[in-house]
Length: 308
Ligand code: F6P
Image 1 (cartoon, rainbow, N blue to C red):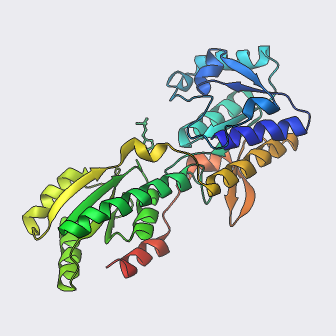
Image 2: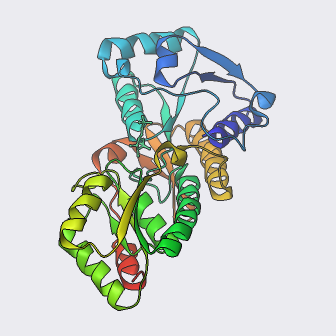
């Protein structure tokens, strides 16, 4: 997100537009907590994880009267437009706010889950994937040496993209995601087949939002039908949400930042910027809110075919 912020500020500056940054997202607007941002305010943040403006899941912003206060704060500071960087919750907030006050807003998709409709990739996804795959590579050393089965639980509240992409890139033999029904017997079958083909250890990637249950329950239930491996569970948790952004995230964020400023300058309000097939695109925020990002079935099939 810092790379996106830097790009927005510098692109605006290039076009002679002044910027301020609100701390903790919508909460900062509600509390009039902001600071002016110029060229040098965003120096040396490109390589930092998280966001220097900090963030919050603002429940207050769900209330119409609180949004009214936010609107008056913006007006009193002569702020003409908002660039909102965040996930589905943030884009939904921007959409509601833009419509309620006819206020110029543009959204930039940022979520490690890559669960935002209208863009191939949201900011943070690539970095989180890198962390997951590097972690699984390390876990595999124990799995291989001890002939163990590892369940590695990754983030993804409602969406299995982190799990699916990392399963392919780390060579996991099975992936459990919210978009697919899961039965313990399917996993047992897959592991049995692996064993019969001389597989001595296995990795299963579990999306936290899967519809069966937590990894510990999956591991426990599995032993009832298949107990030829000693199994272990690792939950990667917030490790996945931090760290210096990888190259692709810095590139995506930089491109989207400039494009968001251009969208505001050309009065293309009410849109989210995204990247589809490597081209920057505008998507109405209403579509982002109404539609759901689906998983790529080809990738799901790919994992089934090659990870045995
Ligand atoms: O929305 C992104 C996400 O990373 C989810 O995958 C995860 O469940 C959640 O955030 C964790 O959020 P928090 O840090 O607020 O618990």
